[in-house]
Amino acid sequence: MKPVNQYLSNRITNIELKQFFSTVMMKFGEELDMLCIQMYKGNEADMFSLIERTYIGLLNNAIVRYYNEKVTTLQEFSVWNKNKLVGRADLLVRIKFDNEIVYILFEGKQREFDGKEYVSSQLEIFFETFETQARKYYDAEKEDYNEQVFIVPIVFEWIRTQKKLTQVLNWETDRDDGHTDFYAVYHSNCQTEDNSGLMVYGKVIKANEV
Image 1 (tube, rainbow, N blue to C red):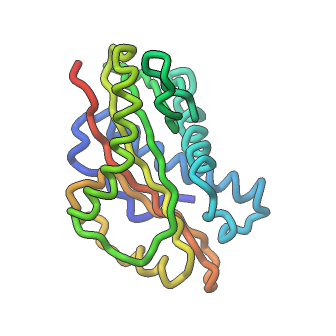
Image 2: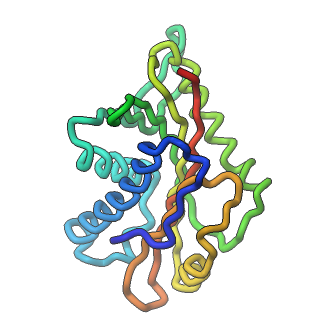
């Protein structure tokens, strides 16, 4: 399942990191294909109402299958600060690029697409909530990071109907909203009212200077 309307922001200035997101969005689509065939008997339209934790698992699979020994990941892990539990982070990725090692701390959210287009100021508020959550996890253990860390709020948004899918596919994909740094749409091929899909998008924030 190839991503359509894929977009990567020029705010991602690290070339290897930009390639990482481009590759992972493609590989995430392959994970959806395997899930559909092996677990949903080819019924694509039934597949997109998954919960956040499941999508994070698929994202993890996509990263690990492609990068193999270059990557180490932790899912749903406890974060502590001075013997006090801060919470559970969704996904931490440590990856060895050609020129550096980076950590990517994902904080996910799943929701259903409501049919609305949001202006830049609304998107800023939307991302801020779980960006703040991820930063709490980073701040609690920042002394453990010796390399560059990126915080990545990521959204898995269920497009429930053919009408809403058509609306999303008609959007301009090269329009920079000032906040979204990566974006892709995945959808089923059946041409019925049950045709549905998934938007995956997020923001890439440099957490520290090294």
